[in-house]
Image 1 (cartoon, helix red, strand yellow):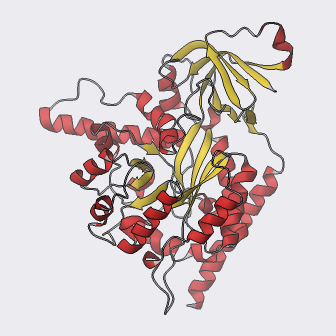
Image 2 (tube, one colour):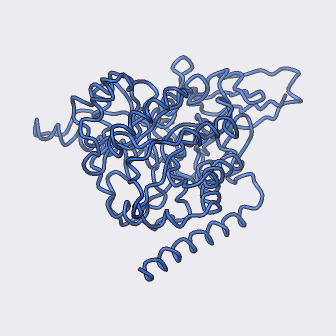
Image 3 (tube, helix red, strand yellow):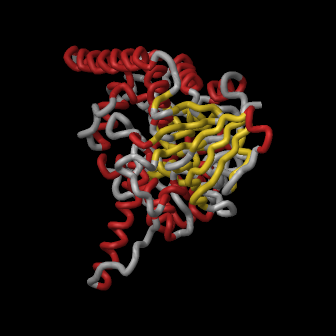
Length: 457
C-alpha cells in the first residue's frame, strides 16, 4: 500500500481536536489519512514512503464546492452582464436547448479539472440540462474521467414548452432515470462520484410535483437540493405544506434562499435543512444579498458554491472571500447605523469562511465522517499551498493567509483519495490542450447555433 509523508508544513486541519500545527506532518496510507502530528517518525520503513518537504507550505483539507452548474464551462464569461431574468431567457430557454451530449461531456470534464486546479477536491455538480439519458451519462462520464470527488445532482431542463407540452414546473422528477443511475454508474453510495437530486422545489414547481420529488428523494435516501429565489414562487405557501406533510428535514438543501422570510427560515433551520450560498453570483444577477449572516445568527453555517462559470470565475477562495467581506460590510453598516461608530471588532473571523468551504460542505453532503478535515481515518483529500510565494510571504496567521490572500497561483499540489492530481503547480494528466480545444469548439458551436436560431425566428 502506497504511503506519503508530508513533513514540516504548516497544517490547518479543521479538526478541533488536532487544531493548527505551526510545524506538522501528515501521513497518508492508501486512500486515507493515517496520522497528523507535529512530528511523525516512520523509522526503518521510510524507504517505501514518498517524503514531501512541506517547508514553507500550508496544508489544508480539500475544498468543497457546494453548488456549480458545470455544464456551462464552455460559455465562460458569456453571461457576465445578464440579470437573472436574462439568464432564464437566454440560457435555459435558449442556449441550453442546443447542447448535445458531447457538449455536456467536455464542459463537465474541463470544469471539474479546473476545480481540482483551483484546490477543490469535491464538487457538487448541479446538472439541470439533461434532456436525454445520453446527456446525463455524458456528464457523469466527464466527472468520472476528471478524477474529482463529486456529487452529481441530477436535475431537469427548463425550456419554454412547445404547443401542447406541459410547463417544466408540472413535470415530476423522472424516477426511472434516477433508478437507472443508482443501478448503473452511480450505484456505489461511497464511490468517487455519487448521486443526489436537483429538484425544482416549491419555488419552481407545482405542489404535486414538489411532494412527488421530496418523497422520491426520501424513499431513495438521496439529498434533495433545490433553488429558492428569483421572482414569485410557483407554489405560494408550498414550504409550509411540505413541512406539514413531514417531508422537510435533514437531507434537504436550499440554494440561495435570499427572499425567505424570517419565520420560515427559523422553521427550516430548526428542521435541519442545509443552505448553499453562491455569494458573488447572487449579487451580480439580482437574487439579493446572500443569507450568510441570517444563518449565522441562527447558529448554522452556510456552504459556498461558485454557481455559474458562464458569469464568474471558478475559484472557491474568491467566493469565500466575497461571502465573508459582504457580510462583514453589512454587519459594519448595521453597527454604524445603530451607534454612529465603527464596530470595536470584526463580527466574523476568517476561520469561519474556511469552514464554509471545507467542513460545512462535508456536513451538507452527509459525509463529515469522510471528508472536510485532515483527520486520521478520513479520505486523503488535501491541498498544499506554497506560502513562500511573493503574494503570501511572510505568513503571520496561516488561516488568514489561506482565506484572504491565496489564489489559484499558490495551489502547488492537490491530492484526492491518496492520489496526486496536481504537483508542482500543474495538473497531472495528458492531453489537456486537446481538451481545451474541444471545449472551445463546443462553446463556439453553441453560440453560433443559438444565433442561427434567432435569425431564423
